[in-house]
Image 1 (cartoon, rainbow, N blue to C red):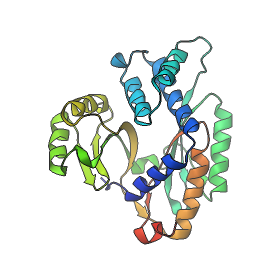
Image 2: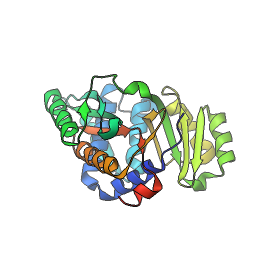
Image 3: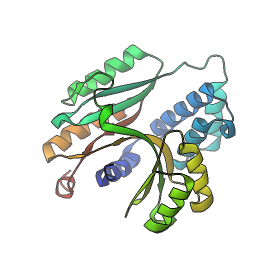
Image 4: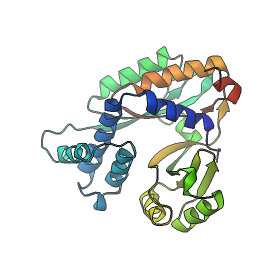
Length: 246
């Protein structure tokens, strides 16, 4: 598996600082509503809802907002959201996966296609790039959780498959089906995680130059600003000298 991307950490921190709090909460609340509507409104009986609530709490979403999102799922007039995955290529042939929750398929597909075009890329068919990624669970812990060896031992005992550690933290990977159980087991040994979610993990990463990085960041910004888009995943990384110029 490819190593964890330092650029992903830089981008992640910048995104959380720049993104409007209300927009972030809106996407988290949508996932909670969908998870509760598809399963049960009780997080103890619904692994997807439990993970969605954990993600919301990690972003300091107030409890009353979480409770309202769950309650909304049980209301007869709640919107019916469809989960969609779009795949395409950005500048430099970089693979990009976009996941969305939408109540209007035509609107979302049209918007996503236009973003790829504006960003110098092109939207492909479903499956055109996902073969270059692995669908896995990712559980994140801060450096303070322990040494790389200690976290590795705890992760393997909890049923995880792999761990990557650097100065930014520990990234624990497991199968999709095991994410909830592994996350719960790790809480008992390492405490509460920073984040626990399903991701598309690139099998390899491609370093890009300054011009390509700027085009890719423009495309990613366009995608992430869309209310229907939940996640954007890519397989590029930026060398430190290029990152310093961005």
